[in-house]
Image 1 (cartoon, rainbow, N blue to C red):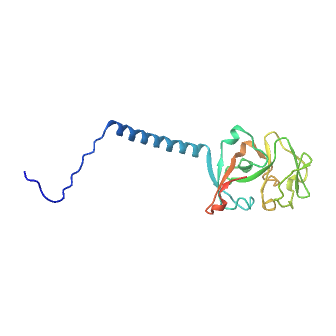
Image 2: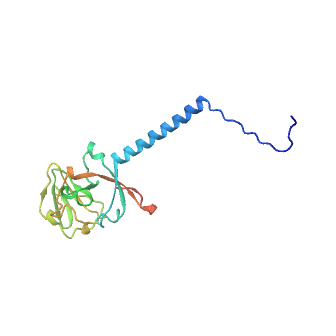
Image 3: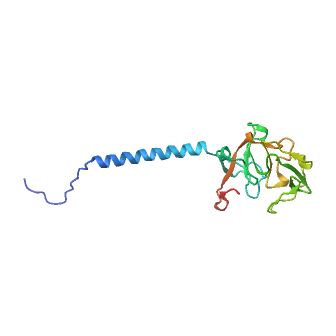
Length: 194
């Protein structure tokens, strides 16, 4: 048979060898495992919610989304300065409240002259908080029970927090977790919550 002149294209048949099949299978299984673990971690450890109101300004603004670490307080107790997310009075029909811990279990809390006193000693704060115009129920000494925390918003004069009679001290069982990461469409406002 005479050979044809001009261009001819030959299609080379691909051979599937056992090593190639094994590599593809391992890659697929690995991808499925990674996706599964990521979903488990996100849904069991973390949670996302939005800030409601201006009580945590300037650090956290109304409508801003934050990530909550729901596991950290299973292994340790909330610390002074932590920003916690909780149900007010355990009311799960309410929105999440986000506030900063200033009083720990067993401590005596009082607000005098717009400042927080813990066990009769002025609480050392960084000076970025306004002097509180209303001490609320903390005008008189409050002794926290073994499972209670006293929380305040960072925007002290525009916050419904433990000073309010309808909130009061927050029980440990009502704390959902620690607010640990803020999200935003503005890059400069993304990061860890301190």
